[in-house]
Length: 126
Image (cartoon, rainbow, N blue to C red; front, side, top):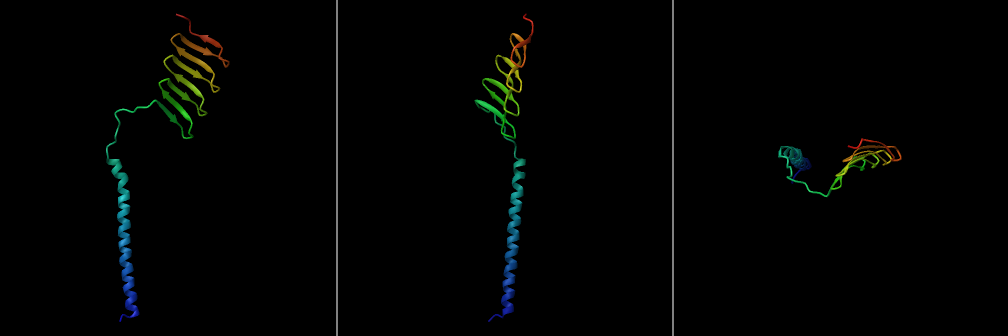
């Protein structure tokens, strides 16, 4: 029959052995987890040949559209989502913070408007 001291010593030995196994397992797991980002950094970057979409929106950190690109043209918006500059097949237009057209460039020339969109100046006709 085993004495109480021998039984206690046996149990402590088993706990120490289990503790070593646990440390080895956790260490191996940490090494694997540390290697995953490194493997991603070594792999060559995949660049698609073509991206297809009907429209493209750039959204800022607040979730507000800042740029829209579509078959209608390119439109830049301010931090409030108000259109400020638009470029399309007709020309380029600039709008103020209220959305009023203030300047435009098209096939007929350059146009400047006041805050009520009344023509202030236009390049002379050719």
